[in-house]
Length: 344
Image (spheres, rainbow, N blue to C red):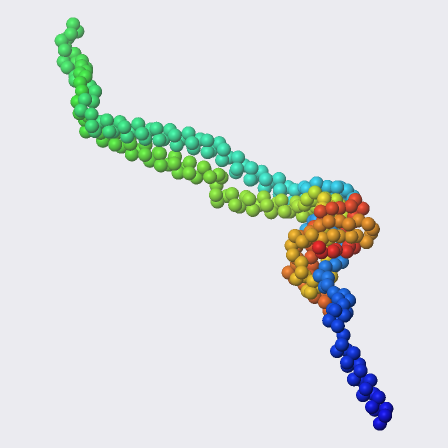
């Protein structure tokens, strides 16, 4: 019992002591607890890629006739990189011949328009002038009462050689004879018909070659170009030969990648682990800092170029691709280097 009494007294003493704590002491205890601030910074991993690249394949199978580039070489848009086949390849020769013939047929049709159209312009001008003159002459005959005319008569005249017939002509003015007007009307109708024909020819030629033949020849030319292009690999843009999988004399199949061209005038970083939790915190144009594992100390500035709409699954996480456009670059940068991206 004594022990229970002592325990109760001790508890009461503790309660009294707690109630007696001053407000200032309580405030001091409260301020001693540190405030925790949430950090919304998003950090992601990624890999370096050129601003654009192209993996180029042949559209035909065969033996490689010539390789004109090597890895690391800079090329210009339109440069011939690799050629499939050779002069002894009948398919290659046939494609070249068809291209020459298709181009000649196209040129003949297009160039013929020049001379024909020039003549059509002249003919239309002449036909208009002739029609105008015929119309003005008819109006003149129909309305003018003082049309110059002549009248000829055969007269029997006494001459030193006896009586003979002579033609005497008399000039006068007056209304045009009816047969003159009829003749002028017929002439005007003829001139109008010629004008209409000249106008039809002009209208047909003014917009270019024969509208029926042109699409056919254009389709033939495009097909011929595609046929020759199937034997060649052309650089689609300025860049560097990043990878070359072709060797002169070796065989290659249609669709097999022969060469990869990369435009390294600028670089991007493609993230690999931005989750659905973090992607909602990002926006296009947002500044970032990129650090490359292979180049310690280099901090490259950039910004968010695009945020993918599609997703992939990575070890149970929903991951979105974010593309970073770098504003800075380092001469030591290479395609595929790993990077750490800090979104600011």
